Every structure is written in C-alpha cells, then in structure tokens.
Image (cartoon, rainbow, N blue to C red; front, side, top):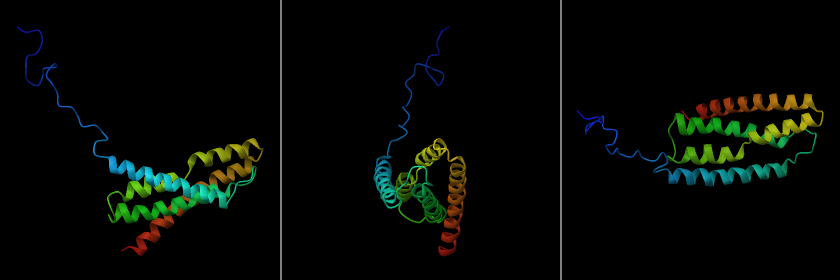
Length: 151
C-alpha cells in the first residue's frame, strides 16, 4: 500500500500544465493604454493651463475636466461597447487610456481637501456634490446623444 498517490489526477507531485500568464498577449492593449493615458494627461494639463486654479476658489478646471470626461465616456460606451464599432483597441486606448488620463479623481479630492483646509467648507461641499451630479448628468447626456445619433 502506497503512502502517496502514484500517477493519475490525484498525484500531487505530477507535473501540472502552467497556466498562461494573465497578461499574455496583452502587449498591444498595454501600449494603447499607455499612449492614450499620456495623451489624456497632456490634455488635462492643457485644460489646467487654460482654467488655472486659484487657492480658495472653486476649481473650475478640474470640474470641467471631469464633467467633459463623463460626457465623452457616455459617447464611447455607446459607440464601442453597445454598438461594437471601432477597432478592438479603441476601448483600452480611448476609455482606459485617454479618458483615464484626462479625468482626475485624485485632483478632485485634493481640491476639496484644500477648500476645507482654507475654511471654505460650503464651497467644498458644493464642489464635491456639483462635480458628481454634473459628471453623472454629462454621462447620461453622452449616452442619450450617441444613441440618438447612432441608430
């Protein structure tokens, strides 16, 4: 009588096929996300230059970036996901890359924290709620607009 299984499926010492690495074959998608992210970040930087943020004031540049990003992601969802149009790399390039690099949750929260630290608690609350509501509405508008245009 053997103490350890010998051969077959129960053999814990039998060589097992190695699972494919989770990122195998994703090089083009990684490149699309990287290039898109760089372009989105550059666009965000440009908007920041056009709409500079004064300390203690409502951060209109960050708000505009996140609301515009919401509108564009709504359009992208319809065009690429719902209608299945475009190149297979369109979603990682435009969605995760460009729009991920363009929109900014981190700056949104830092802006709110700075407003609170400056004693502008009501402005911070309005900024937090206003950005969230406006971005969600913009996403809904983007979805509705794209669905109407692309039938």
